[in-house]
Image: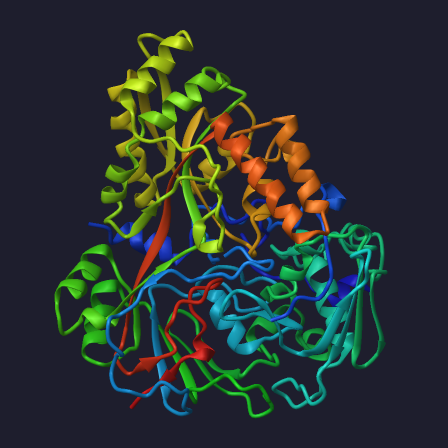
Length: 599
C-alpha cells in the first residue's frame, strides 16, 4: 500500500544523506567561483532519534545544493526580524510603489534545478520557484513572522502537542479541484515515506506514529487526521517548539493526492499545486516557464509569467541584465564593485545579508584541540577583518554562533579580538611554546572557503601553528567531517533551516546529538552544562525563557571555543530598474511572487 501510494523517485544520487544546511546553494558556489503575524499561545520542543531535534537531513553539502539553504535562510519567535540590506539610496526606475499586475519576470540560472517537487526541493535557488507552484498552511511573512496561508485559523493545545487547522474555503489546485484536509495528510505522509527519501523527513518525526511509518512498519501516520474536508489535525509525540516553523517550509506544502497517485515517479513532470502559478513548460537544461494559476485566490503573484533561462554564465547574464533582457543576476564581487562605483548602475545593486555563519571548527576529541587553551589561542590568532577582505568585502564579521540578522542579540557573549600575542601566551600556557603541526581541511569546490582557509593558515603560522592545507571535494569533506577522529581543524558554514537560534546552537553544538558518523556537531563538542541548557531550551514553552537559555548556552560555547566564527555571508544581487518588490526576504532572500514590473 505504501509503495503504491509513494513510488520510489527515479535516478541515482537523489537519496539525501542525513546532514543538512552545512552547505551552499548556487549563491555561495557562484560567489566563490566568480570571486575577485501570528502569536498563538503554543509551545514545542525537540528531542533526538525518533524524537530527533527538528533539523534538516544533511544533503550533499558540497553544493548546498543548501546551500552551504540555502536559505536561506532570521530568529523569530516574538523577536522582530530585520532584513539588513544595503538598499539603494533612491527609488529605482520610477515612482510606482504599490504592487501592480502584468508583465513577465525574466530570470537566468547557470544550471538546471534538480526538482521543484516540494517534498524534494530544498535550497535557496529552487525553493523560491517551488513557492510559485505550491503552498501550505502557513508561510513566513516579510519579517519572518508566521502568517496564515491556506489555513483560515489554527491553534495549538496548551501542552504543545496538538495542532488544529481549518482550511480557507475556496482554495483549489491548478487543475480546479478543491484542496482538502486529506491532501495534507497525504502530503505529510509522502514526506515521511521511506520510498521518497525526502530531505525534510526528520522535521516530521516528532509526529505521533511517524517513526513507525518512516520505517515502513505502518500504513499511515497515526498523528495525522482529517475529521472533515476542512479540518487537519496534527498530534505530536512530544511538544516541539520549532515545529511551527516547519509548517512554513516547502516540505509542508500540499500536493494533490490523486495526481501524485496517477503519475507516481513522473509527478515531477506533471507538477500541480495550489500556488499562484502553474508550470507551463520545462525543457531540461534550457528553460522553465510559469504562468498564472487561474484557480488561485491569493493576493500575491503580480507578474503574468515567470521565465527562467538555464545555462547563461555570469558574464553573459550581466550583459543581458544591462541590455534589459533579464531582470536579476547574482553578482560576483567584481561586478558588484563595478555597479557600486558606477552612478548610473548603483541603484541596481542590493546587498542581502543571509542567515548563515562560516566558521573554523576544532575537533575537541582530537589533540591538541581537546585543550580549551589551544582553542582560545586559535580564536585570538585569526584576523577576521583581513579574512573579510579576502571574501571580497561582501560579508560581515561574525562574533558569535547565531547570525545577528536573525534578530539575535547577546550582549554578554565572550568576544575574541585579533591578538596574536595573547594567542602565543595561551599556547605557552597550554604546553605548546613552539606551536604545533596540524591539518586545515576545506572543500576545494567552494573557493570562498578555500580563501578563508588560506587566510587562516597564514594567521595561524604567525603564532607558531603550522596548519597544512587539506583541500578535498565536498563529498569527502562531508563524510570525514561528520565522522569521529577524522578532521582536527576545518572551515565550514551553516545556513538556517528555520528562524530559531536552536537551529544553530542545538543542532550544531549539543553533545547529546553526537553520532559516530554523519554528525552535524563537527567539533564533537560535548559540555554537559551546555547540553542541559539546550535540552531545557528546546523543551521550554516560555518564549522569553528559552531565549535566555539559548544566550547562556552561547556564552558557554564561546568560552569553550570549539569554533572560530568567521563571517556571515552577504549576497550582492543586481536587479533591473523596472523590477519592484525586491526587498530581501528574511528567510529565502527573494520571493518572486511578491515582485512586480514597473513598465
